[in-house]
Length: 357
Image: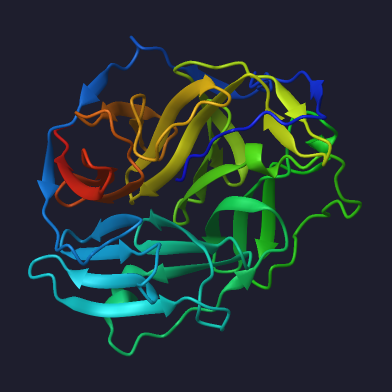
């Protein structure tokens, strides 16, 4: 995630709002505090990678396959598939461009055995089984266009996708937009979707991430700007996990009807990975004063939450540095968590941690 300076614009008017959560009375919830589940410091090992593997983030699948997500030129490809034992390149996929197999801008996640890609410029999504990345004659997936503002997404089954709607917001009239979007594999909305547009653009301060278990028809929705992880079973909200803390922030609307933080800002959940039995969400726990510049690698509050597929928070982890964590992948056979972070020079590095719980 790229952090940025948040500016206070002139010609704004102020509307009071905060991150307070409202949970229906019939929904179970768990409130986390610092004492309920203590945070553990991970014992991490740095994996030394060749200098040419410059990346936005690294993923490791099956403990032996390294996925290098490139984010800058001169790399012509977005994805390099590498043998982690000898660093031989197996495949290089998805060139930059506007062609059918090209990408313009990518958000990526590891959801069980799938690499999930969101081209946020084209507003298209795809999932790729990691085994297919190893085939030399790689068959490119069909990307599905979802004509909405969204971020996290997941396949409920082969014909149904759920996505986190960035236009849903508790305030400014945007409550009319559903928090979750359900679309078929043509990109058509399953339920009616408002067509009359919006008065205030809230998409930069809403939405979240979807971790999906299609076999059990369960998923989590972790929110970027609220301290909430919502657990769904059969597409129905069953439980909400709240905490550890909640920052109240007011928002302003500028002359272009775009939403911004007023005095203080906050972030919660960014990025995740999942497996058949585990889900890991990165909790930024990041807050500060508007106008303060923070470098991309700063992450003093960053934690990783571990959950099972029954709505239970199992553990909280931190890495032993004050650097941000920007990528997660996990191998269930060896109970190994892989984390993309930063060294002292701000360069991206890959850690491995053996989890002992």
